[in-house]
Length: 296
Image 1 (tube, rainbow, N blue to C red):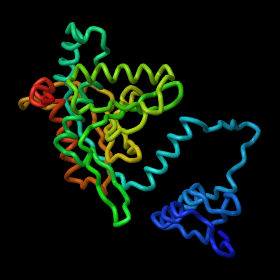
Image 2 (cartoon, helix red, strand yellow; image 1 turned 60 degrees about the horizontal axis):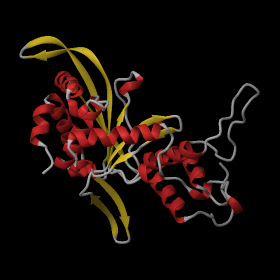
Image 3 (cartoon, one colour; image 1 turned 30 degrees about the horizontal axis):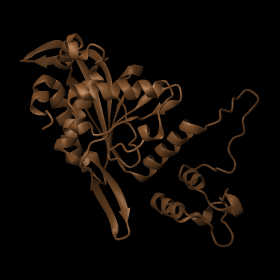
Image 4 (cartoon, rainbow, N blue to C red; image 1 turned 180 degrees about the vertical axis):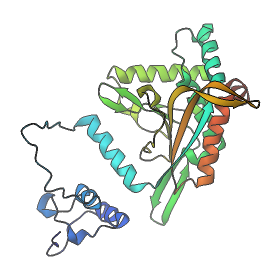
């Protein structure tokens, strides 16, 4: 790559990104106005690509514009992936008692008009874990005197939802202070609004920790990317029958994999692992856990 002649023009945030990624700004030909080096130029250089000279589409290729919600989500995910050091840990959990609780709740008069699913119970488990392990409900902040970790007092639960507009993350505000019934109502209303394309900007900002259900797409697990401004995201996989050791015997049980990605600047490995184990323990006996974790 030819070196840029003369002083390199780039905004302070672009210079910081280049420094964090170990990219030499003087080796980049800027694609911005007046030859400025842009964030895309830096990310392309970090990936060994040339942003100014992408592979042109051929006669059989389709060019799909990336605009609106999809563009905003793509930019947010790139920002998170290149600024927060991600660590992902996994655990499998026997979902027998969670499925039993879901069936019982569906039959209860208070939940008759609600679509109660394992997602509802996993949400409650994640909230309980965030109360016990607050570093997964925190943010990394760069200040004038150095970085700080902001530990949030309130839990605002983001829920990744597949909608006709693309991936949206509506937020249940004050989720940590809700009963299970209140949480189920709030989640159903927000997700229905998102799928109808009626979410407002206020519905989609301010989350402090996120839950995503990739199991609905038939996969077991993954390495979810943390939403910018947060320190953790939990992914739940599909529930499948597997051999499971129970009281010294092998039995077939419905098993789900949980994957927790966390920002290693905010949570160390022990904190992240304990948080995930807490979620799994809750799901192994959710009825008992809910009795012990009722909001005051």
